[in-house]
Structure formats: structure tokens, C-alpha cells
Image (cartoon, rainbow, N blue to C red; front, side, top):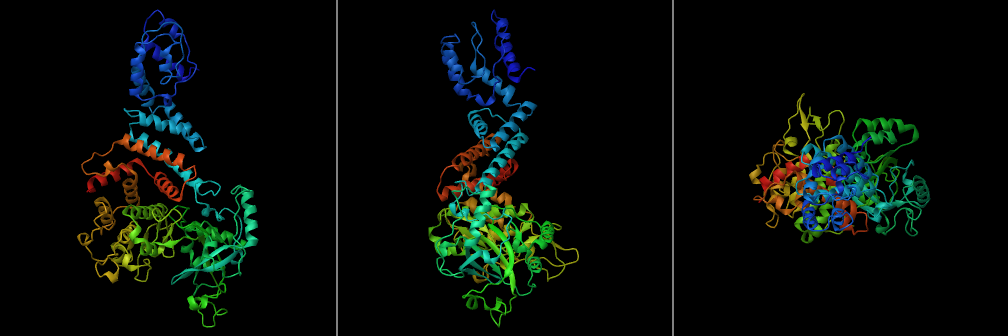
Amino acid sequence: MVSVGQRLWTRLQKFYWPSSPGAARARTLRAQDAIHPLELTSEAQIGSRSAGGASGSRSHGGGLMRQRSLSVAALPRPTGILPPFSFASAHRFLVNSVLKRVTNTQAAILRRKTAQQLFTGQAGPFLALVGVSLASGTGLITKDDEVECVCSEIRQAAAKMQALAQNPAHNIVSPSDAINPIADLETTCLLKDFQIGPIVAKGCNAVVLAARWARHKVADLNEAMQTLGQVPPAVEIAVPGPAQSDSIVPHEEEYPLAIKMMFNYEAESNAMAIISAMNRETVPARNVRVPPHFESWIAAMREKSPTLPPHPNIVDMYTAFADYVPEIKEALNMYPDALPRRLNPEGLGRNMSLFLVMKKYDISLKDFLAQHRQEVSWKTSLLILTQILEGLTHMWSHGIAHRDLKSDNILLDLSGGIDFPRVVITDFGCCLADRNHGLKMPYSSFETNRGGNMALMAPEVITAQPGPFTSINYDKADVWACGAIAYEIFGMANPFYQDNHKLLNMHYKSKQLPSLPEDIPDIVNNLVRDLLRRNPKNRLSAELAATISQLILWAPSTWAKANGRIPNTQDVLQWLLTLTTKILCESRFANDGKALREYQLVATFLSRMSLSRVKEALQWMKNNAG
């Protein structure tokens, strides 16, 4: 069977060497290697080489072939004297015959093969495609549907990069993230498997305790993880020095985990009743540990309600389980009413409750803004807002609404410094997660729970009137709350809190919204305003708002100017390929925390973006640029 390269070489012979004494002999030559489109260089470079070659030697052993080798190295070397050859024309012929015909079968096979090599760790073909795309002035792929195919490959490459970030054996994440990904281990966790540290925080419904693995559990986890190949022998889940007691140890930095203990006043003291009553809290948990005879029940229950896969901007919750409330000496002072009678004769709590094991973060957004407000630039504030929007986009894509978004329920990891914190959304106790109704909740009575903080309820939620056929659509409710929190993020008071006596979410008007500080770009101010549109039909979606924020952060500044032109498809494609190349190459090397957070945020964007959504965001930026 004649190969593609042979057929193409025959066409080149007929096109450039017609009916000459050496043509008959040249046409009998067979190509030794197929011409690969990724070996081309830019047309300008080819043209300059051809100009030099026209006056040089025409022998195939001389300088002409050395010039040709850089652009059409795959062409065979015929013997004999041939007529002058135009490199610029050959380049145009190849682009028109091969590269622009991306809809034919051979091009589709090439793309699939390149993608397969990339996803198995061989990024060479993909990076070569980046080089060709950047070098070609005429454009390699011109149809939007074909560019969407390339975007799909970019999404998969970025998703693979994020998957590698979850592996503690790779240098792509902070060593602190290696504390113990127990989600994939078939092990049952109870409170006895942990050493409890000091109280980190307390709310009206729960208390958060610092924790670390108990010594007897560490050996089991190391052995199990090495068996699964998740941790190399040189990387162990280490336990710090000897503890002073089994309950409270004063050195908080020695505890990489946090255990959230829910206050249980009503549910009976058994795992089934507790998990059923507090199921919303377990939505971001990677698994829920129950006794063996309850496993089929918990599996069926979790199938009925959506769960959140791991995401960089959602709290890392490793597992959840029910156990007996422990005795902690600060408990009588901090939460006496939540204790059972065996620990406090006047307590109102039950003997057992729900425990959520998660990564311990450094600070809440509320405390971070109070402590570092003067040190935070507007760009850092935009980075925080972007990560919140990315987390909301992930939730929305899985049919989940948080319904209690506020600065207390947003946590920060400061391992990358205060200029680039990692932001996660936590506390899903009020969330809406229902496979049957999705994000539309039936609202037949005022007694129906509409969410948490009423001051940050979206207008369509707070003004809803119950009825037999009424439902509340939470599709963009969290986006509105995020817009209100944006005022806090950018250094202002939240205009919807009662102590500010400014606006009410029930009947405010858009023109009443205060402007952000003068040093904030107008485009960011307009973004916040569009997050707070009263009519949800005019409000930005979480996905579009996150895309706009990412473009403001990473795209060329000319794209955000009112008098600039909207970039075409090729400009967008080249920018996306450049971003992908950056994170695929640079994130594999040792980097500081700030750089790692940047790669992670860019990868989050690339793993979900599409050409149509990027174009929509660019059009919004064009219309709203200052």
C-alpha cells in the first residue's frame, strides 16, 4: 500500500519538475520517510533560506540540501540535476495540502495519536504542534469546530496535570499535601486512630480540632500506601516527636489534619441515623466510613445525592465517620451544651456525632482580610475572587449549590505566601444536593430551608413566595453571594450586612451599588456589578465569571482594552497552547509555593475551558473595558 508520504512526494514531483530530462527518473524515486507536518518552520524562515539557495550550489551534496534540511528534511534525495526548487512554494503547498485539511481521516488519526502520546507522558508531539502554531502566520486550524477538538485535548492534558498534583510522590505539590491521602485506602477510621490537638475554631454547629494520625495507624497507612504504589519507600507519612498526652498537645504546627466534630442534639447515636441526618456535610468527602454491615446502605444513599469530586478550590475532605464524642478539657468551657450527659450532666448533646477529617488550613478569609488588608494588592484580591468562582463553577457543574457562602466559610492555605494564597470553599451543611430536582428546589412552605445567611441570599431566593407549584432556582444564587463578598475581598465593607445599613438584598437597585476603590481597574468593578445583577437572567454565570477573571489575570493586556480588537480564533488558540506548554513543562520542576499555586490555577482553567466560552468572555471584556 502506498504511504501518505509517497503519494505526497509524487505530487510534488509532478508540480515542480514537469517534463524535464531528469523528471522521468525523479518520478520513479520512492520517498523513504513520510512528510510530517510538525517538521515545518515558518514561511519567513523558509523564504530566506530559499533566497540564499537560489544562488548557491544545486548539487545535492552541497549547501542547498543543508538549507533544505531545516524545512523539508523528510524529502528524499534524488540523484541527478533538478530544476530550481522554491521552498516558499513548497511550504505553501504543504500547508494547503496537509495542515489546513484537518477534517480528513489522516489528520484525525494524527491528532488522536499525538494526544495519546501526550497523555502517556510523551509531550514532544504536542509541544511541536505549539511551535508550528506559533510559527505559522497563515494559521494551521481555521474552523471553530476543529479548534474545539484541540481545546478538548488541552482540557485532558490539564486534567492529567491536576491528577498528578494529587500524588504526593510528585514535586508538583507542597510536601504538606502528602499528609495522608487516605481516600483510596480500604480502611475504617475511628477517633482512636487520631491524636487530637487543640481547638482550632468553633461555630454554632461544630467545633474544629487539630489532629494527626496516631502512631499505631501510621504504620498501617504507610504499608498500605506502599502496597498500592501511592507513596515510594523514601516518602513516609511521618509523625512528629513524642506527644505530651493522648488528647491535647500544645504544638499546633505538628498537626497537619483538622477534624470537624458536628454538634448532635437530635439524631440517635448510631452511624446510620447520624450520617442520614447530616448527609449534606459529607458532600465533598471522598468517602464515608461505616461499619461493614452498613456499606450497602451508605452506597445507595450516596448514589441518590450528588457528591463533589476533589478540586483545588473545594476543601480537601478525606473521610467522614460516626463515633463517640471525646472528652477534651476545653470542651466544658467552649461548648458545654453540645456535650452528652456522660461528659456534662447539664449537656444536651447525644453520645455519638459525625466527624469530618480534612486538611488543616491556615486561616479563614474573614481573618485573613482583617490581618493582611493593607498588604494585599488588587491582583491578589482578584486571585482570591477567581478561585472562589472556580470552586463555584465546579459545584455548579455537579448540580450542587452551597447556599451559605460567606467569608467565614472560605479557608486559605498560605504556603505560597500571602500574595498567592490557595482558596477553598468549606462548610456544606446548608448545601442543596438533590439528583431529582437539581438546582431547583420545591418551595411549598415558609418552613422550607432556603439556606444560611439571609443577608447574602440572592434576590430571587429572599423574595420567593411559597406555593404548591413554586420552586426556587439556585443556578446563580451562589454567584450573587460571591459578588457581595467581593466588596470585602477588595477592601470595602460588605454593603448588604445590617451593621453597614446600606442595601437590602430584597429591593436594592444596581445603581445603588458602591464602586470599588479607585486603584481597582474598571473592568473588575464591572465584573462585580454583573455578579450582583438582581435579575438572574442578566447575571453572569459562575463559569463565565471565572473565565473572565482568568483572562484578566493571564491574557494579553490589549485584549481587555475598549479600543483594541477582539482576538481571532488563531490568537486564542496560540494563547491557550502557550499556557498549556508552560504548565506542562515548568510545573514538573521544583518551584516555590507561589509558582505552584499559579500553575494550579491556570490548570484549573484549562481543564474546563472551551473556545465558545472564551469568546463569550472576550466579548464581555470588550463591552465592559474601561
